[in-house]
Figure 1 (tube, protein in one colour):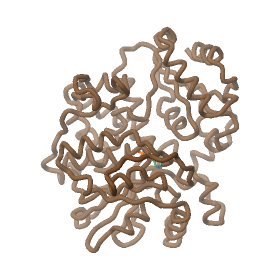
Figure 2 (tube, protein in one colour):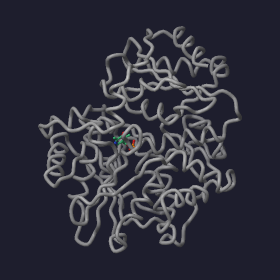
Figure 3 (tube, rainbow, N blue to C red):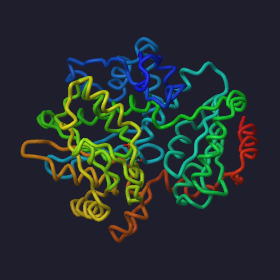
Figure 4 (spheres, rainbow, N blue to C red):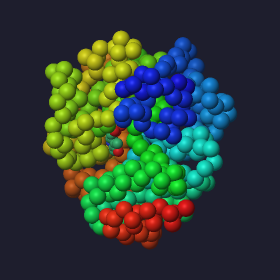
Length: 426
Ligand SMILES: *Cc1c(COP(=O)(O)O)cnc(C)c1O
């Protein structure tokens, strides 16, 4: 697959390079030069999840991997299902939270980890990242147990929820977690120091495995096909998909799927009050405001970093941005929707509920609706318990980790101490 840097067309890379590098020059995003087209989508939809996903990704990666190699990546990465559940007539939830960290980021994170291992030259790799909770867990689980790859995750001590901490600080093996005496900004500053240190970077093979890696989006395309494959045939024609969005990677993946032939009538960009994109689609003005904390905190993003990919794709396909549905939801409204879904017998957390709410507002007669549930309700247990005034159950993976001892190191926000941790991790 050939990709180019959206900020500098002259930088052209292979998939292998894009995966290793993450970002291009001037922080530019990599984007595919061209996309495969599936003419017989029905035949594709008739396949099982892994076989179909391997076909989709092979069509993109065929010049760098054999079909069997791609199938092996898919088999290793997608070890959990993406089921749809009907919540009411003509409205379905796509549950993307059945992976080890109970959020959709497991799909992209695990495929990125497998891809990175597949394109590595056998040298040591150290993944270094700072987390305020969720991304760290997905990265830790994605790389857990992989040969030649060490993971070091920094987080602010005492500033993430005990459940979040239990999920990734109990793994051990090639995963080192560090509780830093400081805040999230201190953690990020330490990571930046490390990447700025050329000698250290070489010595331990630093890689950020960050959230804009193109391999993540490619994995996410596959579950959109999987969702449509599960719909009754008569509901596939007028399909509207609502995506709870923060950095807009998920929506980008859906649009890539559509560009490759997936039958979707319309996508909806659903946000919380951090509504830079809905306002932009309304007024044509890109005017990010300071980020506001909300109940759907994984979507508390006012400068969504995948947006240039959506613009590039729409321009290439001749799709007007006005074809995108949009809407922004307050915390009060998202709570109301969590309760409304619960009253229909569907337990949902605030991110998914935002997508549901805007979908319901905009779905018209004859259309079928699908909204993405990006996290397991128990992942936001404090919020959901409070909204529904009851104690919801912990699913098995969370309960298992919650009972294990924490293995984190404790360090000050000091670069010399971090260097030692990175060396010890080898
Ligand atoms: C990351 C995340 C989102 C936002 O997804 P983007 O791809 O960044 O738009 C939504 N919900 C949950 C639970 C998340 O973790």
